[in-house]
Image 1 (cartoon, rainbow, N blue to C red):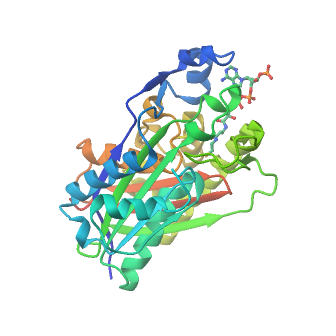
Image 2 (tube, rainbow, N blue to C red; image 1 turned 180 degrees about the vertical axis):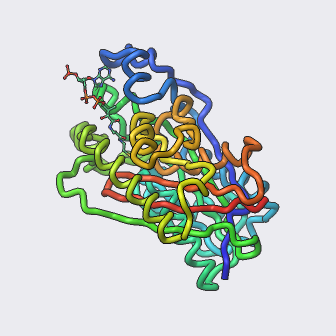
Image 3 (cartoon, rainbow, N blue to C red; image 1 turned 45 degrees about the vertical axis):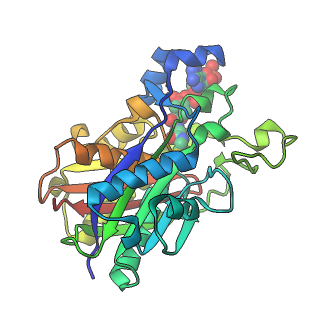
Length: 323
Ligand code: COA
């Protein structure tokens, strides 16, 4: 059985927070943030909830695919910042889109969309599902320490979605996920935090992101380069066959380094982190939706999706655009 991405959608909060807005919390400025990360601004949820963003993205993806919620056989939601831990985001989405199928969440941090795509792809390939809705959504603002300038400027909130189907031409030509135990806990959020915090007395540092930025940076460059090379060798493609790479939108300098290691033109890397920052699991999904709606993709265009995240998780998928 073949599997295809037949529709995409995304949703962002309305509130824009620009780099210089962080001066109210920490000692920083636009020049440092942009030159070190490529980020100019990000969206932060004020009125939105995770389910409102995720449902908006999911409905857009279903409309783009021309598929109704009733036709969906499985919903997978990738997040680590849910509104609540049960019902899961995927079960809440079931109601929002009018589906009656199995639904579950997965947590692979910033690699969440690639992990969800990989699981959905394998359900379809095995014949266990014909249509799968995958949604990747995170609100990192819930777990951001706004007094830590090394992390607070990096993240944003958002959601992205895709519909996978057995009925397309089979445009997912490769998909693989990886994980390596981060024994140093270089990227960690130890505490429980949700829309309704369970323990208000939890020390702040136990419920927010803390990070060894340099360790993550080196790991990100290494794993993205390795995963793309492995994807090419296992799919029988070469670098020149790839028209676009949609990478996790964490930092433009990470992408510059990967482009140099792969000897690939930086222009082939689709980037929207100047507008949204790092939206964690949603990042690749939002970027794929924007690339798909941009008119830059033609039938036969090869797009490689690639992410890394806490855990450490990573993964790569290659699509041969069929629309
Ligand atoms: N504004 C101004 N100065 C800042 C700053 C900010 N927002 N954040 C850090 N600095 C300062 C540091 O305090 C340090 O100052 P010091 O030399 O006086 O001690 C200096 O800038 C250099 O810090 P450093 O951490 O070495 O900067 P860097 O060039 O490594 O960039 C990151 C930091 C976080 C941008 C970079 O390491 C990175 O992007 N890592 C990957 C993070 C990531 O992708 N996380 C998500 C994974 S899914």
